[in-house]
Length: 341
Image 1 (cartoon, rainbow, N blue to C red):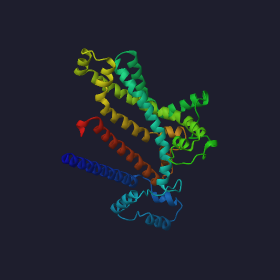
Image 2 (cartoon, helix red, strand yellow):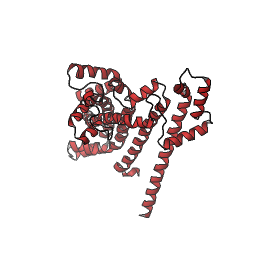
Image 3 (spheres, one colour):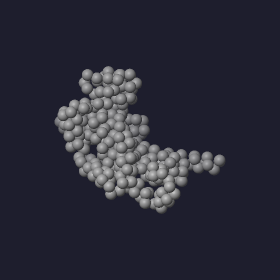
Image 4 (cartoon, rainbow, N blue to C red):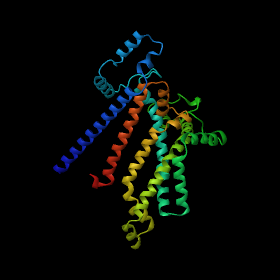
């Protein structure tokens, strides 16, 4: 028991150290990116009509006259205190902006990955068990479309058909103007806030706005997850223990979902985690097309305005999400596969 406890403590300690070093590396990358890009942060603040004296005063006030190493440690200390600087686009702290916009992206990406997993995993398994048949061919074409169709084009087509043409869903934005401000922003996740407030009109209106962009994101994750699930299952179904199970008369559903599917859960976690992180990171085009007030839209606006504090803050949040998802995947590995402990 004592040996196991010691191993557990060392495991937790190693997990914390690795996470801290990874985050420190992320901070270093974002810091030096902010220094090498051809955008002058001082000029972005004072404007191109400022005098040299005003420029120099702003540069000193921003601490850019100090050695690079000192600037980096000041940056790390500020981030650790939750200070990401002030956005010149919104004139508010970047941390407050990110707390406002990131839940919108999280809401859309979470529904998208839910669609991708619920439909993609069974589709991949089904295609693997029907290798070479029409089901398999359709799934492969579907996966190819998921890799090749541009997100902005699919978003525009979706709006033209399901919003302008059929009227099945609401249009761009997160809410109709009439419903804005009716529920308190407790989590900034509109569906949760509306449910907590008991305002179901706002809930269904928010869901109507969310379903189309989330479905488009879900289409891309579905294609990737289905393709990888099919590949993993084909490898498992060709193993000798699957043949042995069938010879022994084990029901086919059990052969597929217990003997075949169980071993692929660990690699499938990696696929789902990477797909989820990619949705959180790569929703820029979808948020632009649908005027979705998420981190992708915020990052695009910051880039156009040369707002480096906002750009670096958004980049740091996205990188942190990748780190967090990878660490959650590591924990799930140990839960599903005790041999990895």
